[in-house]
Length: 316
Image 1 (cartoon, rainbow, N blue to C red):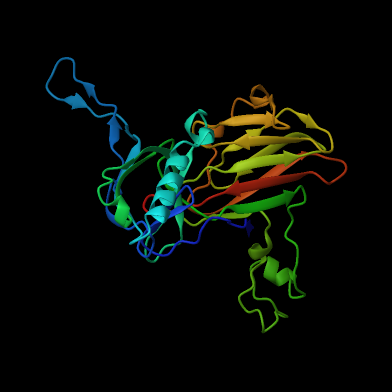
Image 2 (cartoon, rainbow, N blue to C red):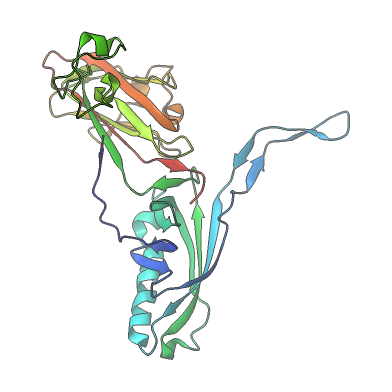
């Protein structure tokens, strides 16, 4: 399991970032207050009792999570710099890739003390300079609204990745693996320098969701391969595709809400080739550690499965 490099600005505690502009403590855009950091509003599915008082409770789903920032651009004596920051924020709202595409999203990044940087996906719906009376002095108060959509959770800013070949046997990385150790008994020749080694540590399919909520992985199968079948050993959810891929071809499976798809080579829809038991919207990684495994027909032994995910959290 590896972590992909992150090119976004590094955030300190009590800082946020939208469109490349850092807001909060120690930045040029201090924040006075943030509304909406609690739980999102619910969409109750209650049903009225037809012949008696009250109602029958249904399932409570989360709605969008609106976050409202009372902030201000603060560049004393430098109105040119203040105008430049305001322009960058306006450009972030106007980004066509996020604003006009149904699957486009803005990204809000934030960090609180004791946590790493986390992010939320949604839309930047409001970015207004509430007054320009003091702009000449480098002070422009702002009213910013970001709405978390889809599954309005906070996600780890670092993307975790895993690549699996069809050979998922545990590979020894030292000379201390013995039959006794593999059977769970004390190893007679374990190296003193590595007393905590366990056979399961070498299992290549382990994935860890460090958060407290289930997260949605992205999967990509690279050919040559036929009939790939992917499953999670904890949730028992399965994704099985009746497809054959030549060398250089791939199938991408996206499980995130409102972006569920199965695409061959990035263009051809192969969702109809999924088995009836294959539910993209239910294939999640639970909190903690679980294991991804897969099988397929590949005489060459070069096929591989790529898994990418971000740990999910209920709070910032």
